[in-house]
Length: 179
Ligand code: PRP
Image 1: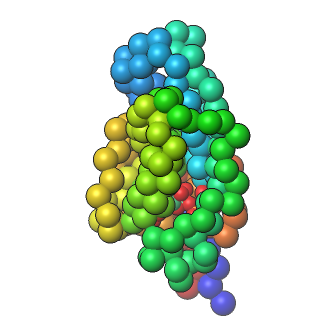
Image 2 (image 1 turned 60 degrees about the horizontal axis):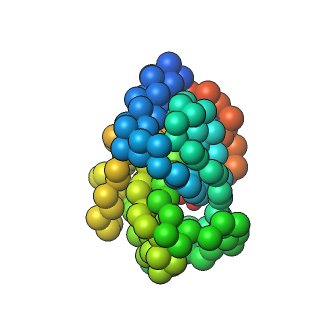
C-alpha cells in the first residue's frame, strides 16, 4: 500500500522568511498608517498570517480576524460553492481589508469570498497569498501581494496540509508517495 510523505523542499524557511518581510514592506508602503483588517482564511493561512503580521511595523494599525469556509467536500469544490462555516467577528463596512491566504489554486474560494465580503461594503478588499498556482486557475483573481508562483504540485508545510497533517512543517515540501 502506498503512503504519502513530505518530499523535497520546494521553498525553504529562509526563502519564506525573506519573502514575508518583503511583502510586509510592500503592505506598509501601500497602507502608510491607514488602519487595516487582516482576514485570515482558516486554517491554511494561520502560520503565514502570523508571520506577516509580526513583520509589519507599528505604523500600520492592524487588526486580525478570521473566517472559515467549507467547500462541501472535494467533489463539489469545482462548483465554486463554498459556505462560510465561521464568520468574521468584525464588521467590515467602510474598512480596508486584506484577505490573507496560503494558496490560490482554482481561485474559486477567493472568487466567492470576495463576492460575499464585497456585499458588506468594505472600503477596499485586497488579497495577499503566499502561494499562487496559476496553472490550476478557473477564475481570474487579482492577487495584490503574492509570495511565490509554484508549479502544479501538491505541497505541504507552513500552513498547508494533506488530510490535516504537516501544516506545522517550517519549510514547504512537495507531497510524495511511496510506490
Ligand atoms: C485551501 C486554501 C484556500 C483554498 C484555495 O484551503 O487555504 O482557501 O484551498 O483553493 P482554490 O483556489 O482552489 O479555491 P483548504 O480547502 O485546503 O482548507 P484549509 O485552509 O483548512 O487547509
